[in-house]
Image (cartoon, rainbow, N blue to C red; front, side, top):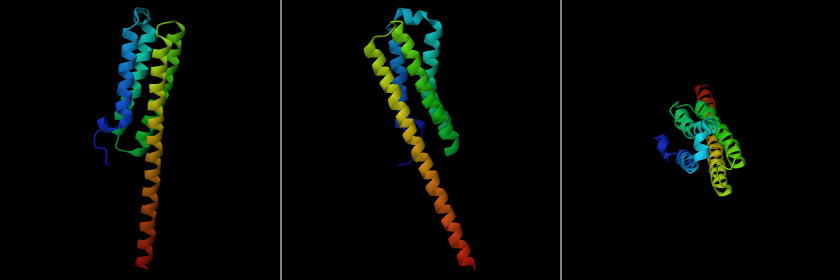
Length: 141
């Protein structure tokens, strides 16, 4: 199945859920809302997880797409760290923390699996291209 739009990517769909979970958790806690720095960093990390996927997809090159997927993975880890602070400050419950942590983990794994797929397809393409060149060279002789 060929993906034509970033909205078709499962990792992006799951990242979108993650962003909504973060906004919900912040909305549930007045103290979290008032911790402007942590709130803004958490929202920034969550939206980066989601936003770098289409940004990389739009580059139309596997190498650049992979680079942006790594940024998405890093942002997911950053978000997990921010939510440890939120948990320690009692801005979120253990249950909310666990849901967000697991969703960030899920998106990171999906990004990682897509990176593996893109690298494999790039390798297969290079091998096929190289085999064609060798065959054409032999036929020309």
